[in-house]
Image (tube, rainbow, N blue to C red; front, side, top):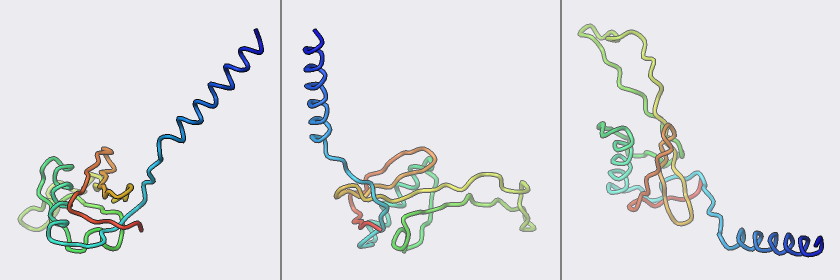
Length: 126
């Protein structure tokens, strides 16, 4: 019986190895926006806003053109004298990063892992 088990284990290992080769691994590379345009900026702003529960965001025109990471700090609420209304701001900034996965450009919200496929945005690896 042992020889049959050895043959079965060997065949199983070969099938497993073949299955691993059949599914190509798509690399996730840090990326920057290759061709910024009003449409790509609007798409990125929309994805960031959606990740933040629909909160309006204002992003720089060069967002993701030099770096693959975006950090958004919470707006500070101030009283009429210009002092922080609630003392120190204890909330953590929101962080996003841009990836090139195959031919796709994907925005990732680090806090939730939520991913947004950017169809109007062209990325290149960093």
